[in-house]
Image (cartoon, rainbow, N blue to C red):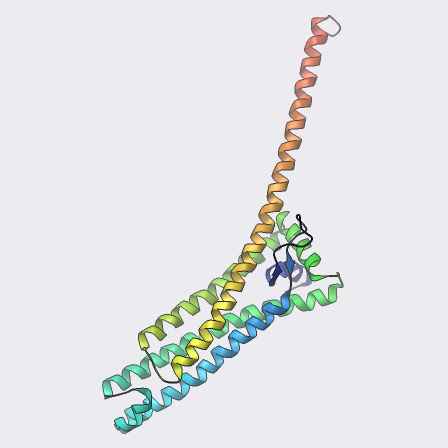
Amino acid sequence: MNARTLLTAAALMLSVQAAHAGGGGGGIVFDPTNWIQTSATAASTVKQEGIAVQNAARMAKMVIDSGKMVQGRSLGITDMTQAVQLAQQLGKLAGADDALLNAIGNKQTYINDVIALYGASKSGDFTTFVNSIGQRANLGNANAKNLLTQHDVLNAAIQVAQGKRLQIASEMGSVPGVTQAVQVATAALDTLIEQNQVQASALAAQLAAAAKREAMETASRTNADSQMADYATATRSRLRTLGITP
């Protein structure tokens, strides 16, 4: 990304710290610190889940290879068919975890680039920096529009990967070690997804408010122009009636 692209991206990489600044219409207050931490926590818990999945997969494979059910008791395996099914489901879950980590990683790269640009910009507080980006987007800047779309795509990728992961986990049922890890990671991911949604909603509200103000100002100017035109027309008509003008 070049500097201009990163500048417009800044509006997308934020965590809402408070609803509004300074009371009436002061703008939304943003803080990227919490977003960074939430993302890092989500990634870390998914990695821990991956370790638990790998351990369970190894044990399931041992049962399959040895044909001895005694090794599968800790996983709740009671027959060979169940062992094979569990190994397959664990493989699917591992794949879903990889996709989820990739989606989170893309978002982390995005915010890291923006934070680096913000630090280099020396533009004061982060909220002012972000609000200026929102203004550019509202003015129709192509980079800003593209990056808003990219932000939505990144968030959607995380949600899709999370949905697939949860479906696989529910089909697999309870597996000691794995189920607990899934629960911990799910809580962290739910927080991240909710935060992404708050970001998007806050930015959308900001842009909608700016668009509404612009529409009202345009309507006011149009009305004033119309009134002036009507006045000029009426004046010319009156002067013609009085024989002052042709």
